[in-house]
Amino acid sequence: MAETRQRLIDGAIETIRQHGIAGTSARTIAATAGVNQALVFYHFGSVNDLLKAACLAATRDRLDQFEQRLAGVDGLRDLLAAGRELHAEERARGNVQVLAQMMAGSQGDPELAEATAAALRLWVAPIRATLDRLLIGSPVADLLDIAGLAEALCAGFIGLELFEGVDPAGAEAALATLDRLAILVEVVDDLGPVARKALRAKLRKAGAGHP
Amino acid sequence: MAETRQRLIDGAIETIRQHGIAGTSARTIAATAGVNQALVFYHFGSVNDLLKAACLAATRDRLDQFEQRLAGVDGLRDLLAAGRELHAEERARGNVQVLAQMMAGSQGDPELAEATAAALRLWVAPIRATLDRLLIGSPVADLLDIAGLAEALCAGFIGLELFEGVDPAGAEAALATLDRLAILVEVVDDLGPVARKALRAKLRKAGAGHP
DNA sequence: GTCTATAACGAGATAGAC
DNA sequence: GTCTATCTCGTTATAGAC
Image (cartoon, rainbow over all chains, first blue to last red; front, top):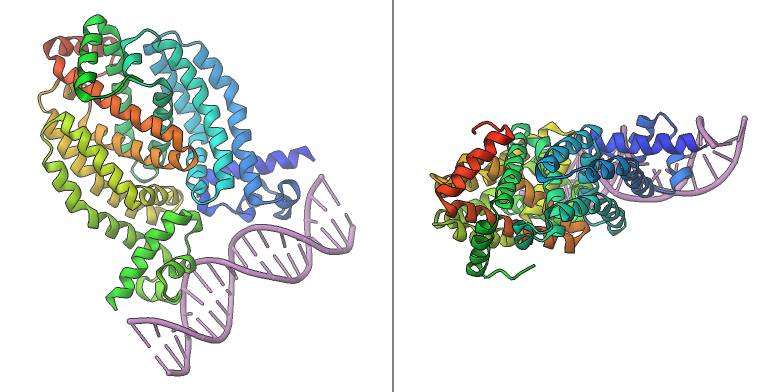
C-alpha cells in the first residue's frame, strides 16, 4: 500500500531528526513509523534507498511553497524577512537538520552523496534565482558571484543547524550576525555610484578578477 | 603504552575523515590504527570516550599555531589572507571534516555534544579575539556583533566542508564568495563617516537594536 | 501487502591467556 | 600492555506464512 511507503518516508525523516544519521537504521525507522522492520526492504530495497527517497520527497514537498514565497519578494529588505521566515519554518519542520545529517552521512558514501546533492540543488536554485533578480544592476553584483552567494547562504544555514546542536546560544548569535551582514549588503547596494567606485578600487587592490 | 593511545587517537581522526561518523566504530578505528579492537576499551573505556579524546587532542595540537598566526595579523586584508591560509591547512589536515562529523554525531548524543562544544569554543575564541582587535572603532563593529561574527564564520566553514562532500564545485564558488564578502566589509570599514552615517540610518529603518 | 522467523554479520564490551 | 576468545545485542537482509 502507498500509505506504508509514506509512513516509512515520514519515519525516516523523523528518525534522522531525532537520532541523527548515525542513529538511523531500518529498525529505528520502522519503530518510528510504527511498521515492521522488514517493510523497509520490501518497499525500498535498502536503508540507503529509503533515505534517498525520503530526502528527495521531503524537499519536493516544500519546494512549491518555498519558490512561491521567494517569487513574491521585491527588494533586499523583503528578501531578508522572507529568508528569516522561510528558514524558521524549514528549521521547525526539520528539513535543514535532515539535509545536514544527509550531508554528513554522504561522506564516504557516493550513492547517498548523489541523492543529497540533488536535494541541495533543489534548495539552492530558487535562492539563486531570487538573488539574481534582486541584485541585477546593483554594485553588489559586480563584487559577488550570485550563484556562489546562494550556495554560501545554504552552506551557512547547514553549518548553523549543526552548530545549534552543540551550542544553541552561539548559533543564535551567529544567525543574528548573518542578518546584520545582509543589512550591510543592503547599505552598499543603496550607496550608489560612490560605493561602486570604492568597490572597484578595492577590487583592483585586492587583485580579484571580475566574476 | 602511550604510543598505542596515540595510534588510537590518530586512527579515530583518520577513520572519521574517511568514513564519516556513521562509519566509525571500535573495529574500523582499530583497523586504521593497526591495533586490536579490544584496546579501544582498555585505553578509553568506550568508543564515545575515544572520540571525545580524539576531538580535543586534534584541536589542541593545532591551536598554538592557529593562535600565533592570528596574533600576527594587523589588518582586515591580512586577516583575509590568514583565514584563507589557515582554513586551507586545517582542511588539508582534515580537522574541519572531523569537527563537522562530530557535530553531526552530537545530534541526540548529549555526551558527545559537550565534548564537541568544547572543541568548537577552542576554535572560535582566537577568531573572536582577532576580530575584536581588528574591528575596534570600525563602523562595522557598530553593526555586527563580533562574537556572533566569529561563530558565523566557523559555522560557515563547517557547512562548506559538508557541502564540499556532495558538491565540490558549488562549495568552491561559495568559498570564493565569502572572500568577496570580506572585501565588502573592508570597503565599509574604509568608507569612514559617510558609511557610518548610512549604516546608522539603515539600522534605524531596519528596526535593529544596537548590539 | 504485511507479518514472523531467521540467517549472517558487525557492533560494543568483557574475561582471561600471555 | 596486548591479544584471543567470547558474549550479547543490533543491524541488514531474505524466506516464507498469512
